[in-house]
Length: 83
Image 1 (tube, helix red, strand yellow):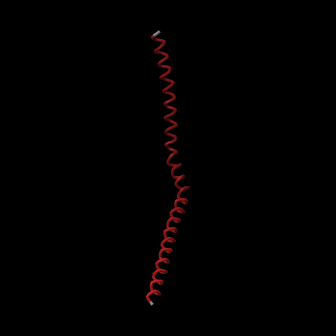
Image 2 (cartoon, rainbow, N blue to C red):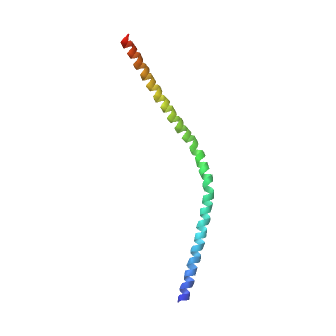
Image 3 (cartoon, rainbow, N blue to C red):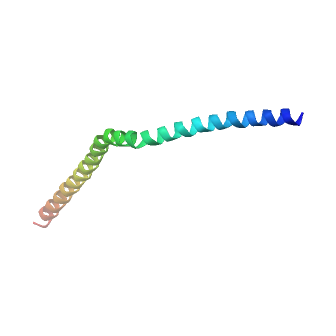
C-alpha cells in the first residue's frame, strides 16, 4: 500500500511539475510581450494625453484672458468714476 501511495504521489508531483513548467513558460512569454504592448499602448495614449494637456493650457489661458478683461473693465470704470 505504501508503494502505491508513493507512486501516486510521484505521479501527482510530475503532473504538477508539468503544469508549473507550462505556466512558467506562459509567464515568460507574457513578460516578453509586455514591453511591446506597453510601448504600443503609450503610443496610442500619447496623442490623447497631448490633447488633454493642450486643452488644460487653453482653458488656463482662456480664464486668464477673462480675468484680464474683467480687470481692464474695472480699471476703466474706476477711471471714469474719478473723471
